[in-house]
Length: 310
Image (cartoon, rainbow, N blue to C red; front, side, top):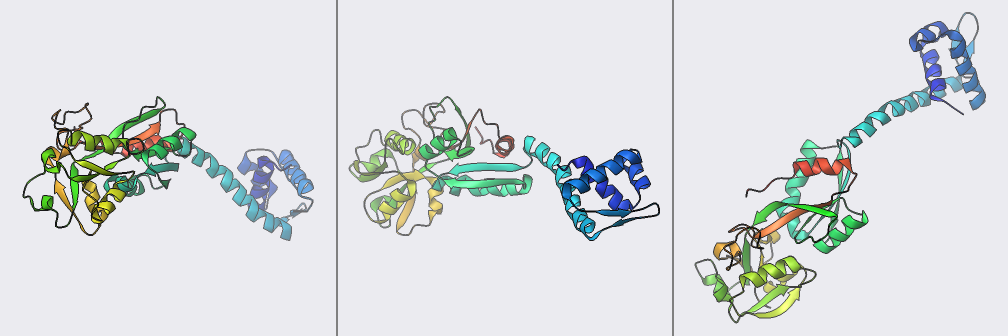
């Protein structure tokens, strides 16, 4: 069996071409150095060094083995440093889940910052709805996610990283688009509204219900994703409430309209802690992760995420 002591002994002798100088370099005496070389040659089954009382010469096999031996020592020397960097979170891999709209509002900013400040951390992206992200984190398939609340699971931790207003999306030429003011709940009375699935898209379902509490719209369709809602609006199937970042989706045939107080809950004044977020910015994006994660790179990435203003 090859040992690192044998490899180091061979490299020293091969580079010095002198047993005495090689022994001094390794801070050892010549007899154990010679034994390392002999054991190495017996293990490999070839002669690596021709030596007599006057000189030491590498054989052809020895010259070839020297290249590999140097690579082995370099690998050993850097492996420890890499392990220490991984342990500190300076390098490694983070598997990040995100939703389509969160990619618009946050993902690009985060990836650019990571590339600048933690270039040796690889980020593997997984597009999933919030429920899929939660499941992926619990199964160990993801390290973190950019998702929408609530997160009623003890193993998960979360914090807000982005806030924005809620707005309305209506077809081009719709009467609401002609109003020169923010829209109020009463403006939606009797209108067909595309809402969200109360299970798969619980967060935007609840935001829509809260804003339209005192209105009497007709719920025509319940969808899972913001993009689907916007596309149905473009097809003339109704109007919808979406986060302001959806303006960047670039869908033709629709108009975005501001809502009074940014779409906050009309009954609570947009106060934090009641589902309304902050007045004017009720839509929250959270980073979520497993608090028991042992991935050091995750904690470094979490440190770079912004703290939105309260």
